[in-house]
Image (cartoon, rainbow, N blue to C red):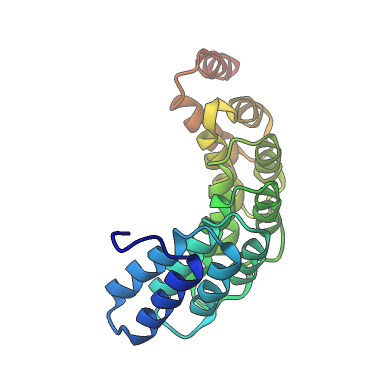
Length: 215
């Protein structure tokens, strides 16, 4: 900064050299962040992918996944999806799912839904559902309601109910009301009732009163 502006090619080349020469994990974390704040995904992502898929410590590979997600780049999104599906480390898989949720592309929501719906490992399914609950999207809401009804295991369905309660702007309230009233599994209805009880929306209170009276 103080010596004068440098092109991304110059500063990234310097950071890559420093990363290769450094043996301290904290220093390497800072160098990954330094790479990540550049504005040229075509230069940044190949290096971060090398770190993500390499044999380094899991927390550094997770950090690389995070900064790939910050690029909001289609090629980076594909790299993160591969990591979420196939990396051997639970920490890295979950980090990749979080990074996908940070990608500011419409396809990112589709990828989270696919991970939650597909043959992903249970930890990936749960993390995908959780982060869908942090996204203000009609598509996310519809998917979560479907998972709450047809998610297979009770654990996945309960995770989807919780995620609905987390949707921004109270978007999950109407699905929660439907689930509390109509879900065939009493355990899921109970979960929906619980999260309605945490809501300050008058519609939630009205629903709870109706359920009590019906009982």
